[in-house]
Image (cartoon, rainbow, N blue to C red; front, top):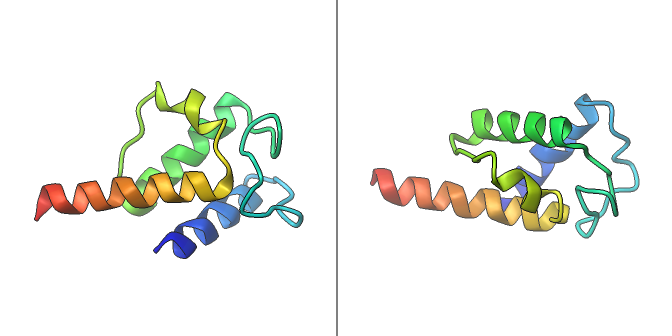
Length: 88
């Protein structure tokens, strides 16, 4: 599941005109890596929410900027798992 999420994130970032050709699992989303600004992080979060049926709060964006691609993918997978448990 995490690889599917990672692939979706990279495809989405590419669609947002970010160069993902050199992105690795350890690339930061924020200033130390892709340098996504708050609006881009919000856009990414909305697309991930729509694709995977989860929610991010506004307060989550600051911590998201400090995550790597793999950390963000893991966070999305964890939210999916919590949502699935909550609806079971």
